[in-house]
Structures are given as C-alpha cells and as structure tokens.
Image (cartoon, rainbow, N blue to C red; front, top):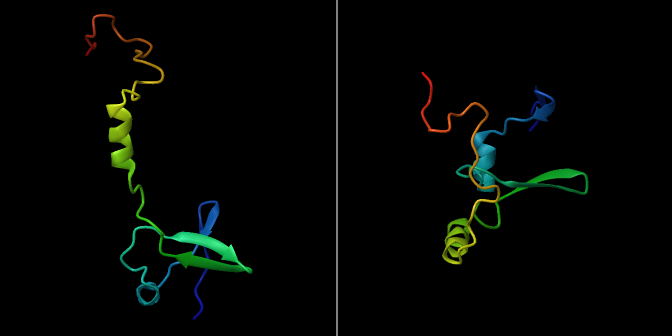
Length: 87
C-alpha cells in the first residue's frame, strides 16, 4: 500500500486508513508511541495509558502539603487594588 506524505505547516504528515489501524489494534486509541527502527517508522500501542497515576500523585502531593503555588498570587498590571474591574 502506498500513501501520500503531505505538508502540514512546517511538518509532514500521513493519513492512515482506518482498516490499517484496525489491523494493528490502533483504531480506538487517541495516541500511540512512534519510533525509528532500522530506518523504519514504527507505531505502537502505548505501554500504559496517558497520564496514568497522575491523579493519585497529585492527591499524594496535596496530602503532604507540598502543593503550594511556586510564584504565589500576583496581580496583572493595571488591576485595581480593591479588586473591582473597570467596565
């Protein structure tokens, strides 16, 4: 099977037929891993779901009290000190 390599902005892209993705088991995924192996572009199912464990890690950080803002609160130039916005 041959497919076209298309310009997408400053990059290149290809459209993969759904049947081809289905054969590889990639048709229902939102993302895949990509690599170059022996001069060949290889797409694979990810080893784990995207952002797996992030919610638990964030909860752990918060429970330890380590979730303070790094830069603190600050206003924007032109904000009123009383908090009222000019309309």
